[in-house]
Image 1 (tube, rainbow, N blue to C red):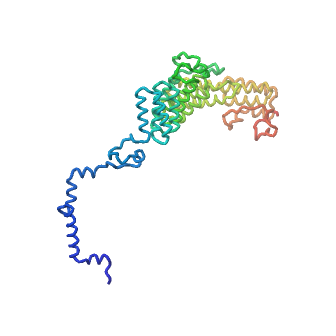
Image 2: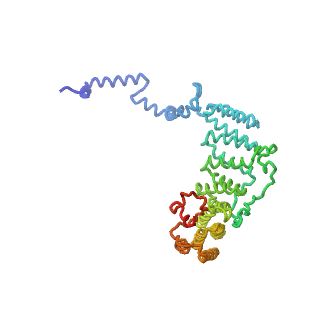
Image 3: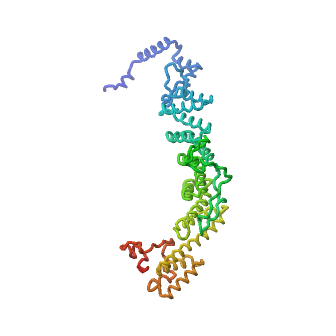
Length: 447
C-alpha cells in the first residue's frame, strides 16, 4: 500500500522534528527573546504597546476619507471637519458676521453656496445667509433665503428651525397671530346668508395704504416686502405645511391660514384648508374646531332657497358628525339649533321649486314636489301648505290618471333615495332623452 501525504508526514523521523524546533529557538534568541514565549509575555506586560494595540487612532471611515483630503504631513489624530471642502471660507464668512459686517458675510455665504454646490458647506452657507437677513429684520429676503434652502435641500437638518422662522415672519406680517375660535362666529342668517358678518380681527392695528392696497409699493418699512405683505405671509405659512407636513407647526400654519381666509370672507379657501386639517391631522389640537368651523364655512356658502342647496347638505352632514364626535364641545347647542334651521331651509328650497313650477303652470311637477314635502317633512309648516295645493290640483282636475295616484299615494316614493334632485325645465332637454329610462318623470310632466 502506497502511503498518502499525511502518512508520509507522520512517518517523518523524530530527529528531523527535533532539529526544526532547535532552529526555531535559535532564531528567537537571535532576535533578542529569552524564550519561545518571551515575545508575547513582553508585549502583554508593556503598557505602552498594549495601549497602541487597543487604540483606533488613525482609523478612517469612508465618509471621513471623503470629507478630509489630508496631506502626508497631517497628524494621525486630526479628525476635525476644518479640512472639509469650503470649510475655511465658511469660517471666514462667520467671522465677518460676528464682526457686524453682515452684508459682506451674506455675499460670502452666497458665493460659497454657489461655488460648493456638491459640498455639505453649501447647506450651511444658505442657512447662515438667511439667518443673517432674519437678524437684520429683512424678513422678505430671509423668506427667499429659507425657500432657496428648502428647494436645494428638502430634508435639510435645519428644517425645524426654518419652519419656526417662517411662522414668526408670517405672524409679524399678518398682525393677527391668533386663530379664529368657535365663539367668534355668528349664526348664519338663512334668509340672506351674505348679511352674516365674518369674525372680526382681535386687537386690530392701524394699516397704511401699502397694506390696504397690495399693489401699492412699500418703500418705508424694510421689514416688509415691497408688494403684497399679507400674500407673502400666506406663502410662508404654506411653505411650512407643504415642506414639513409632519413638523410640529404644520397644523398651526394650516389653522392660521384658514383663519385669515375666514376673517376675510373667503369661505371657499377656508373650507379647503379646514378639510385638509380634518383629514391629515386627527391628533391636532385644532381638530375639533376644524370640524365646527368647517361646518360654518360650508354653511356660509349657501346663497338661499333660490340657489343650489349642495353646500347646505354638506354643512348638515358635517354638523351632524361634529355633534356626534364632540358632544361636550362649547358649540354643541348651537350646532343643534343650526341643524333645525337647516331642515327648515331644505324644505323651503323644495317649496321654492314648487312655486317655480306653479308659475310655469306644470301641475304634475307641482304635485311631485307636494308629495316630496309630505313624505320627507310631514311635521313642517310647509306640509300643510303642500296638502292644500295638492287638494286644489285634485279639485280642479289638473292631475289625472297615474299622475294623480302617484302624487296622492304616501308611499309612492318609499324606495327612492332621500337625496333631492332639482328638476330642470323639460324644454332644455334634448328630444332623444325624454324617456323614463334616462329622465324619470319627464313624460308625466306633460311634455
